[in-house]
Length: 150
Picture 1 (spheres, rainbow, N blue to C red):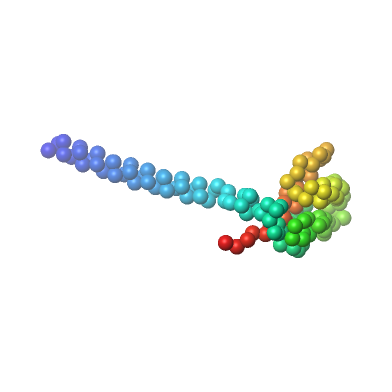
Picture 2: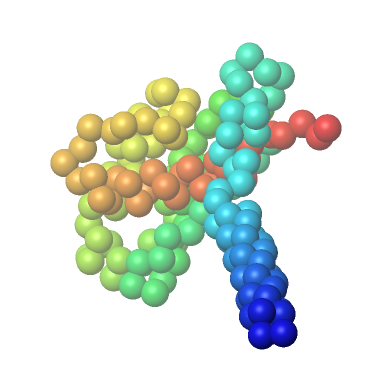
């Protein structure tokens, strides 16, 4: 009779371990689903240049926060090309504390317009400033991408 009690205790522990493993696997799967990036930014989502339309025409805005004040990066596109890129709403105090933003935006805009892509590797002595501005342009262009409905 003593062996039966040990067997019952072992079965209880097996059931507990099984439940803990199932809960752990469920948590890992949920974490992977929520934390891994989705399809955003894939080639399927962004039509290739040969497609009928790459962008939805219009002006799209992305915001950069400098000293708790927003600065807007505006990107204007037609169906197949980037037409203009510029910054707006930059206050005088921001110009004083961030003197490189306007000239870097001008240079970056010229390169993006020349190559018609924000995914470029600009040659600059100021990679951090240029990276911030480039990411703002990319964010605005993501809003403009045309995705045909299925």
